[in-house]
Length: 133
Image (tube, rainbow, N blue to C red):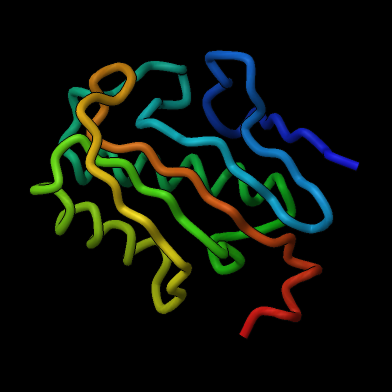
């Protein structure tokens, strides 16, 4: 059965989607933009601040899904300027530490609200993680 996850600990979805869906122990997180707790898009922030906000929100969704950043299998990162990648990657490492999930990085022309990045994740529920080395 597919279980939809909507949490009060991350900005409310602004369209017809869930923060995440869980199926068979896998958690698929929708792309997160730099949106603050009050629901305000924060394109005015530096790329580092936007990245911290995005990863903080993703961390909240993971926690409310029974998972964590240490249980992420794959990350999809979309940046509006590939020249920002080094700075985004530093923040990525702050959040993931030694854990290195599979990852794709894609430059796109534009992101919603003028954001500089958007990140989506696939994770496994913590109780199913015995298979991750």
